Amino acid sequence: MNEKMKKIEDMSLNAWPSHKMELYDGWILRFSYFYTHRTNSVEQFGASVLPWREKIPYCEGVYKRLGTPAIFKISPLVSQDFDYMLENRGYHLEHMTDVMTRSLDGLGPLEPCPDIRFRETIDGEWIEALFRLKGTVDPVHRAVVPSMYRAIPKETLCVSISENNEIIATGLGILDRDYIGIYAIHVREDHRRCGYARQICTGLLQEGYNRGATNAYLQVVSGNDPAQHLYRSLGFENMYTYWFRVQPLGGA
Image (cartoon, rainbow, N blue to C red; front, side, top):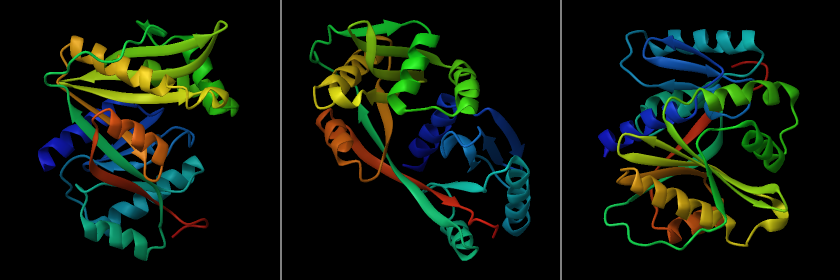
C-alpha cells in the first residue's frame, strides 16, 4: 500500500508544478502566490538527515519572506509524530482531501460523450474558461497560473464542453506511467447536475485507457458529497486521505 501511495504522491507532484520550488533535505518547498494549498506547501518526498526542530523554523522563515504562512502537507507517508509536533506549534488543520483510485483493467464501453472536445495542448482559451468557472480574478494568479499548467511535464488530455461557443465545463487528464490523473473538473454553476462532469470524467477514463493507462486516480476535498458520489458511481474508491497543517497568523 505504501508503495502505491508513494507512486501517486510522486505523480501528483508531476501533475501540478508550482511557480517556485526549493529542495531542502528531502523536502520540497513549493510557492505559487497562494493559488492552492498544494502548490504553496512543504512536501516530504525523500529521506531527511536534519532534525525536524531545525527544519520547521527554516521553512517558516522561507514562507515569511514570501509573505505567506508556512503550510505542510500531511499524508499517511508522513510520521504521525510530525503532525503532532505541528499541532503543538499551533498549526491548524485545513483542506482534508481524499485520494480515490480505480483500475481500468477490462474497461468496457462507457457512456458516449459526443459533446466533449479534446485539445492537444492546454491553450489560452481553456485556461481563461477555467479562471471564469472558478471565479479567479486575482491578477497575480491570472499571470502565473498559465505557466504552471504549461510546465506540466507529462502528456495531458485537455477537455471541455461548450454551449453557444462558450466553455461551460472543463477537465484535465494527466498520463503518468500506468495511470491517468483526473484534474480540473469544473462546471458552470447554472449547468450543474446536468451530467457534464460525468461526461468529462468518462471521456477522460476512456481516452486514458485507449492510450495505455491501466489505473486512474483523482483527489477530492473531504465532505464534497456530490463529487464523491459521482466518482464512486464511476468505480472510484477511497485509498487514503491527506491534509494540510497551516501556521497560525503571527507565526508559531
